[in-house]
Length: 100
Image (cartoon, rainbow, N blue to C red; front, side):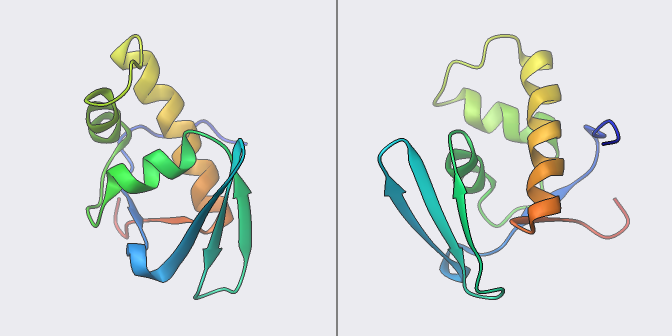
């Protein structure tokens, strides 16, 4: 996999386009559009919630998450979040914004 670009913008589907159901240590996310159910762990549900309806880059999302969670070093957190965002885009849970 290529290195994730922290400057890339990502957009999550609206909250009403998915059903989120916590299940012990995992969370099930059903996408209405695709009909696919994803089984994910933390921090995916928190990332999707923090994205809201905004197109965000990794640094912006890291700052939003840092308001509620201890992320350690902000630069390290942004790099890790960039990797997770790229993975979520591959799964179809978020999309890269055109032209980003």
